[in-house]
Length: 173
Image 1 (cartoon, rainbow, N blue to C red):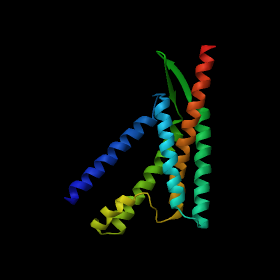
Image 2 (cartoon, helix red, strand yellow):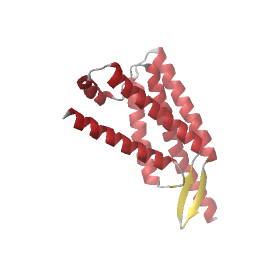
Image 3 (cartoon, one colour):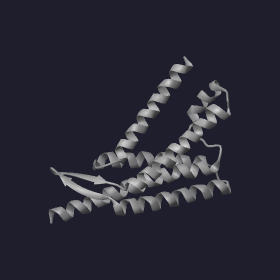
Image 4 (cartoon, rainbow, N blue to C red):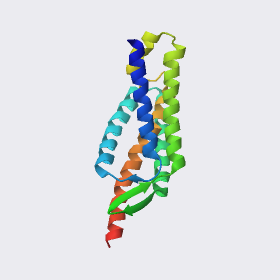
């Protein structure tokens, strides 16, 4: 039974990775409602990661560094984002290199977490139970890596929403 659960979790994770990569490459249809929901969800989860890290000096520094790096990446990415109108629908194309960098940080952290759970702990049952705490981190610096991703997508989504309105106004004038 444990192998079935592990296989299902692995398949779900691979599927989500595929969707994340597909949504980060090439022209994407701008869907404001989806961006808004995503922003709210990521903000809530981001605050949970922020507060779960505790108040140690290393944790606070890591979280601050992650938030700053995520914000800077989002700012640069939004400045290089291109918009295109097709058949009355607005599309955008973000910086490929920044998208890959943010995804690599996320997937690298996820791979590290799985490595620690399954290979360092060595106890498969204990590791399966620990999957429920996948967000918790043995190192305060890992929280900062996650905040890079959260802040990047939050700031970038807000930027897309505000630039969309400006772009539509410019096209109608």
